[in-house]
Amino acid sequence: MPFSRYSPVSRAPDTGEDHRKVQHWVARGWLRDRLQGTRRHNGNGGDIHRFRERDIVTFIRAHPQEINLGKLDPVWFLDLVLLKGREA
Image 1 (spheres, rainbow, N blue to C red):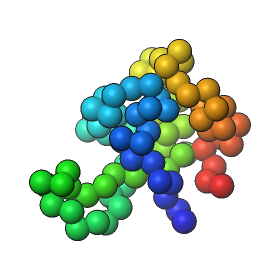
Image 2 (image 1 turned 90 degrees about the vertical axis):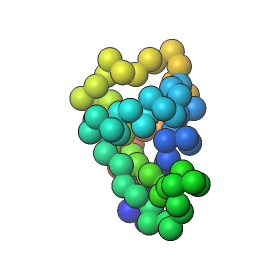
Image 3 (image 1 turned 60 degrees about the vertical axis):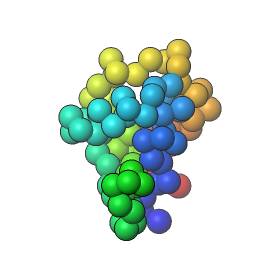
Image 4 (image 1 turned 90 degrees about the horizontal axis):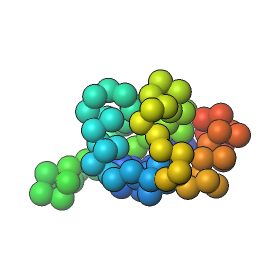
């Protein structure tokens, strides 16, 4: 499976940020997302956005000031850094 199961809502707790901030990063083009391809309408929040781990790593490298290390889930972050954004 080429895409991770990460969505703005599921990623937000690991980054320690509100999902709105994650969506802001996407809107600015800082964090690359991909649409899952669901047929959900806007009333249900529209399509589901997904992120590859390598795109999260790229974002962190380009915008480290956006990440508050004190808010991060340490297990998630160490796993991400040690795998260096490679999909398992």
